[in-house]
Amino acid sequence: DGGITQSPKYLFRKEGQNVTLSCEQNLNHDAMYWYRQDPGQGLRLIYYSQIVNDFQKGDIAEGYSVSREKKESFPLTVTSAQKNPTAFYLCASSPGTGIHGYTFGSGTRLTVV
Amino acid sequence: AQSVSQHNHHVILSEAASLELGCNYSYGGTVNLFWYVQYPGQHLQLLLKYFSGDPLVKGIKGFEAEFIKSKFSFNLRKPSVQWSDTAEYFCAVQAGVAAGNKLTFGGGTRVLVKP
Image (spheres, rainbow over the protein chains, first blue to last red):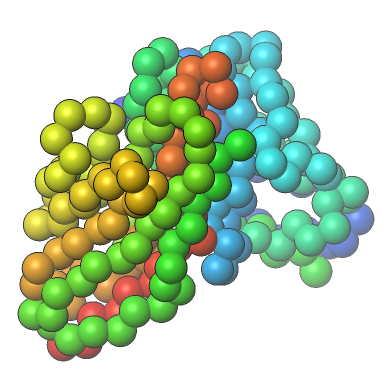
């Protein structure tokens, strides 16, 4: 079945460490997105990529970095510069051309201690 | 930039009651509108979407939404809820290709349906 795989489901890290969250899709979608979900704040866009080797900052990009070396993969690194990294992170993809809704992954819950 | 406001953070109601969740957006251009649902422990799923045409949109599981352009609103409704409708509901607005087809979400409404 086609879909988006995020791993791991739960992740614990010590404060000051960088951590990379994985997102893989086999939907042949051009566009991929990273959102952060916090209670009462909905989903906020961190980074997005419309095509391989290109990406743009979203609304809350500070303290995060991404890469898009392959169409299928869009990993997100939460750096030590992110002031409040504990959150639920969602990856999504869309065909990219025209207007479409997104397909979401199951998310990664990151806890920094 | 677009923004989305959902009026209620929490809604509690009994089975068979009617549900209406408010959503207002701000954006100067043409938008596409969505409602997503997140059941406990599950992925975000698309409930319904509006691109153009009939402003009354029907989605899955008996949900519908009405786009009122003059009010910048896209409220979600269900005439009779079930316990299984307990979930968090998100309204979202999508600008066009030039804006990266980005979805902007509202803050979400947690709905608890009591049996």
